Image 1 (cartoon, rainbow, N blue to C red):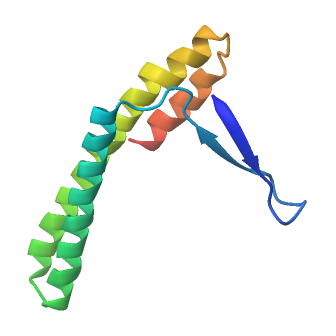
Image 2 (cartoon, rainbow, N blue to C red; image 1 turned 90 degrees about the vertical axis):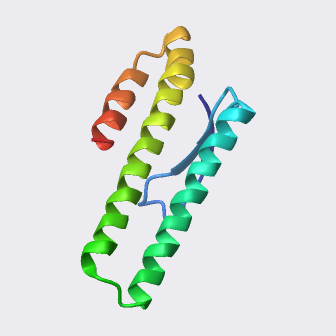
Length: 110
């Protein structure tokens, strides 16, 4: 994967790294992910409005669960794309350390 390093102000802190995909996401996939994010943002705005309107706690929790589920699905789509593109490309280049990163990312999405 192509890396672009950004240095931090303090030498005691580790360098922050901003990485970019070697292969760009397909336009259709990007649009799908952006649409999902916009829907979740709308749901979060709805939850905020529910709080302002002093809505029943149970109704708010149902909406929170819906956003959590949507975000989980979003994460799995990004993970799938990561495995099919970035991980495959790195393994083909001989970088098997990418598998450790993939396992850690999977653990984070539990």
